[in-house]
Amino acid sequence: MPRTPQGRHIGGQILRSGTAAAANYGEARGAESRADFIHKLKVVFKELNETTIWLELIALSFLISKETIVPIVAENRELCRIIAASIKTARASAE
Image (tube, rainbow, N blue to C red):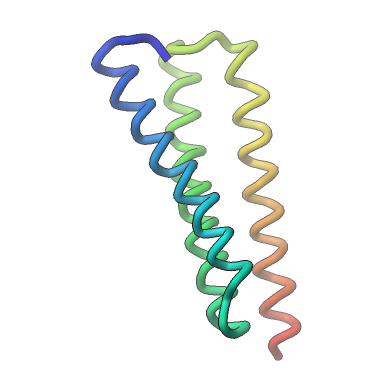
């Protein structure tokens, strides 16, 4: 990220949401119940969605080259799909 006020702000936001997703995933792995597991995965999903928004903002504002940001956005979206599928599976097996 460029060392501009905008770059530092967005970089800080991505750092927070990206690391929150990882930390909450760790919490989900140690969930005390299926409901707790689902809840924590939903928090992971929300943090990944927030990260997607910041990554898309970076892409639209050209803060990082397109060649660099496009695969990162794609990987984050794939993580969103994986977590969404995990939530769906956990809900289905709870019924």
